[in-house]
Length: 211
Image 1 (cartoon, rainbow, N blue to C red):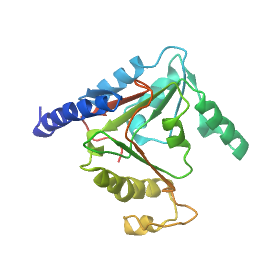
Image 2: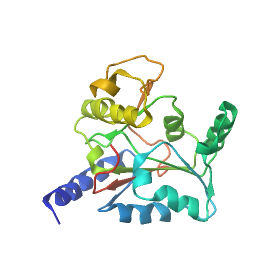
Image 3: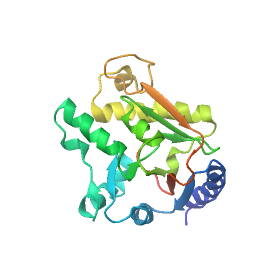
Image 4: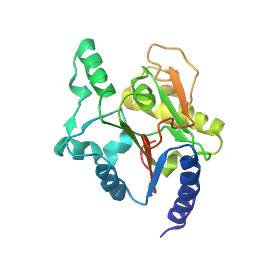
């Protein structure tokens, strides 16, 4: 084991204890492969499953595994019209399982997510029977303020590059606190407590995942 791996394992143990006090169900997996196996064990056969835009679940192979598995996969990417997209999001609200990552996590166990239209954070807060949040330990920041800063100045600018959004951060690399039509930072949500114990399940991964 490397020094970083040892550190991640120790930090995850501390984080899990804090997350459990917030009524999250939290787990630690040392590798992406282990995280994939665990995530699939949490999803019942035949369950309806959807996900938000998320590089982490793509990286670990979870999206492909769900598509190929014995699940009812709700794929909003095939929607071509605004009405079809709304219908897919509405179906997602009623799904059994919603898969996502977090843009940042504070060392006190709070989740920070930043979103453009808000559909991803809406399903995190309400709707699906369970939400499985998969996050690499690279997403862990210090204070809540540091986690918000990470979401705005690291995760969001990279996402704007990925999505080719015409925002100030595309050229500067840092948040410009903009109000442009392409802004993906319309909503910043802090999830500090899970009101339905066990609904939000967090899998911390001892490797860098997403951004």
